[in-house]
Length: 114
Image (tube, rainbow, N blue to C red; front, side):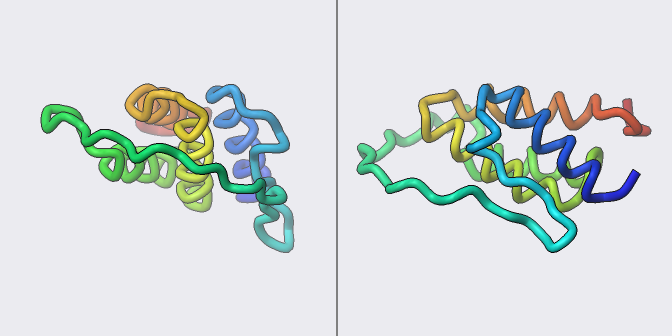
């Protein structure tokens, strides 16, 4: 299966896992990545610092990027971070989003590490 096909399948599966619509998710094309039209930014309150016992948001994003790159397809890593940002920006728990995407990546068909 070509990298673009796997990437399209990953984007659809990851977006679906996070409850995002196809309008939220970019799609892979032979010419590259086409991102959806941007939406106007809204002012958000400053987030509270995370407790030291929990992984940082940066660590969560990097862990998901690693899992997607190693188990699905490398170009899926930055797109997964993008989808995580949308979901968390809409109120999803960062740790839950990371756990769900990592599990999806680790159980991806064709992954030899299952």
